[in-house]
Length: 172
Image 1: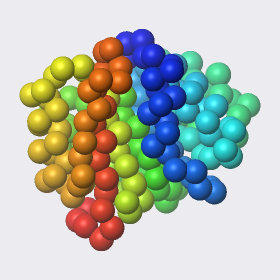
Image 2: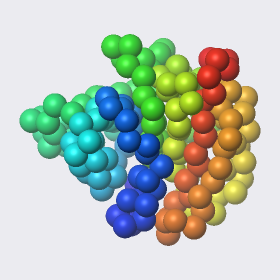
Image 3: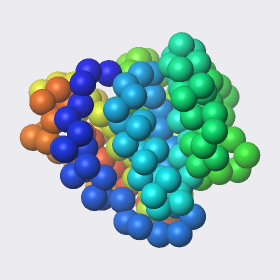
């Protein structure tokens, strides 16, 4: 993941409505800035934060960095898993900064749907200005019962952010 502007990411974090025992999930293949900022938020608010590391070397780094923090749990994760549910945990917010290959995106969204709470949000980071990729993601999100998809394309220099909501009782 390219460098991300911390001030702008803090603005994005304003979408997180504060509630007790909130859970944040994150699919990441690198980029410690976002992980650090989400970790700080979760420590401050007593939220749970699970980082599904899709790159083994990133997992090794994070497992050492966060081994003493109970609110942050890095997991060595492969996107090819048959299910993404771990210990029955569901998330109000699911950040996706990992690169998801095009041929895996449909399967990814289907599996991710089962770990997002009803009315929870999936937040996908896309390369800035990649309109074709954005259109493809929005189409797949609709196919897999996500609604109210919106893009923020002027917040970060290198990324557009696609946010979509899992609706109560729909599909999956």
